[in-house]
Length: 468
Ligand SMILES: [Zn+2]
Image (cartoon, rainbow, N blue to C red; front, side, top):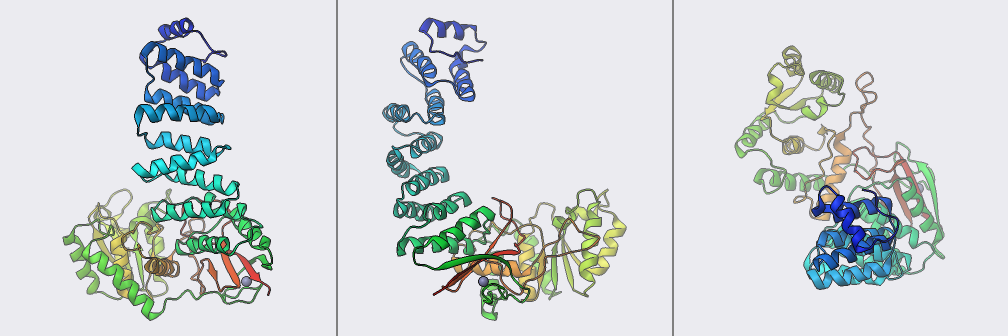
């Protein structure tokens, strides 16, 4: 339906409604169309007035649609009116309506009202990321950085994960601002990137650089650079953190993860205890391996090739160095299908040990167990990122160690050059992660924006040093 251009009288709305195929959803369809066409607010309002007169009442979802239109057009006083109506009528709203209200108000001079609504939301649920981020940005825009930081910390405490966008906004809005407390908070954001192995993209990196350089009396200077293979920064000659874990770090990490894997308290375990036991016995009898391969994952690297051929190429390349390989497979690989040829499977089994799990099992637990039990030298191949192991990674030290181990031990097969020139991400001697010594910061960054985390570490760095 095409919304009218001017407000209508009751009779005119009635007429339109009667002509409509499904009169019972007429208002909803009409409002959706108004949202799409960004119709004038008084047209929508005349429809609502008509509905109220007819039914003595306006349904919740109709109000929310009207609210959407108001937010879309930044009609602040209407937003507040709708909120008043809804509050009285429904007491508690669902999160979609709260998101709208907060978003609409946070962009206006009534932004403090958005904070009031956020407080309301907190009483009944964990506010959404959108709610927090709208309020944080509103506070930042009005130079209330302390408030913005409080909201940010509160959000983290509730396990609401911030977007890169809101993290970047802190650096943009704090530019040139004084204050030791604020500086500490922004350093904290950089450490958050470190802990979660997040790499900023180019524009975010620029915001960080500009913020540092704007600090009054700070004498910070940033340069873009590539780190030498030795791990030395060509700009400031500083040596980056070593990528190797110490013996103690390694044993702490592997004990912690293996314990969680074996006791199965963690989501690592998606397999039956019996199958995992069989796997353990298998591994213990053949230790140690040099490389553990997630077979199914590697098999999908090039979709145009047969899956067993992909795996075959990977095994051949990795076997060259005389390495002891373990391939984690699935039982269906043994069925001699179009993707899995028996002869090729046979040949591979001469070059590597294979463990075939039930078709449904997820590999992470197997992969981690076999790699960690093999020792510090053992690496693993998967294109997955092992990101979801919350229980095990709940404390920040273990999380840091796990990510560091992952960076140093995960072999990444590059799709482009694979398999003709088999290439793997070089094992850097230095650790590719945000790092600081106090008067220097080194921040790896990516050329492109990726909200999704990637397993490939960037080669470009921002070097920031303070000239005292
Ligand atoms: Zn440097």
